[in-house]
Image (cartoon, each protein chain N blue to C red):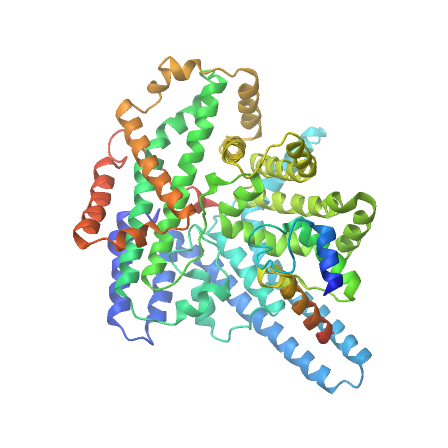
Length: 76
Length: 535
């Protein structure tokens, strides 16, 4: 989770990733940031994020992102 | 009976009430078939024998989806029996390849029909132009096809269904009736919105009984849509047609061209969103939530935000089926990683995005029509959005240096007006009579700009008198008030419904009387044909 927060802060520093649950809804992460985020997460956690996973529910908070990463790691 | 628009006596006074009546009196099990029969009947009325195209689409996606399901079941069974991870990977890879081929076959059938009917004449006309350019005497014959109304809408729905099955977002439906109703539901078949199977199919097939609230709320939405279309859009049609048709012959100045662009944008918005109100209201009557296609677009503060508020279902279709698949493809992800190392956080994801934006906007332009002016319209937005992404980090720094807060009202108003102006110029290109005409109007706009013809009264000779202008201003104020309420998260229909009966019924009556009295029909007016129905 710490690594994920570091990636998020590197991509978009202006947010409190511990508490924010509206990263997509409040346009904190736009499509450009999502593109970077997916590339970095895939590299760091050795997973492949299919496009169907790119939905607000999975990207609205660091916790949701972390849950998606763990699920994809298990599925692999 | 021939339908040319949802806002017509034939649809509103005969077809829709007849379907509601049949739906109400027949038992629950039969109701989905009532909607299906009504949808096919409606399609027959608007496109006659061209109904065969949508039937081909329905059968093709139904079979393709079942085929995909079969491949997935087979893969799952083999994976279960596999002895190790390598074997599992190999099975998944092989099955993935086969599934992709099946998906591509489905896309080829549906987009192929669209391409042949809509784009092959444009392609062959340009082949002939090229042959002429290289002084060749050879010519190819240009085919002409009759296109069924709504082809561009239901083709995208068809692709979304098989793609979502391929991606395992949804299961393939074994009920061909449900697939057929999802594809052909009569309120959405002419002008969208582009629905997703997961959002509407189940509800459409449920045969739920009609509820008083749904019917009355649906009727109110329909009434508001009619108001927008016949009081505003049809009234603006004369002046807009005059300016766009005669600007060259009468040498109109840039001020008049800009006025034409602004009025056309209002006309397009009120016509299209008015029709969508009728569509969504019709669905609401049957308890079906049709996705919203507009969310106060003229409150957008940037072009990309505008496209998240205007024709939303087309934008999300391009986002989900073109933008993300392109940017998330393996080579693009690799490119993004490399670029982030070299260009940094802000510019790293830009190259992949710009390539994806290009694909999206080329398709968006072509979706609207087979013509160079539509490609130009797409490229105009591609340039604006790419430029916006490129200068965003710089403008952020500049605003910080100048101590301008982008969240403060004056800056917000500035960005809203700037976006609206750029949108109007885009719509001017969209409504031009070709690329040459569009470039001519742009040239006039920038080289001969003056407000002379607006202030010397000659604008009043273009088809609108003082009486029309007052009605337009009052009605636009009503539409704007509704927009502001919605933007603030309030539903005007809920607000009216919460008032006592002696308040809300006069409001409903006033809306109807206002539309009947001030609607632009009869002598002196030419109602617009549904603009989006022919795309």
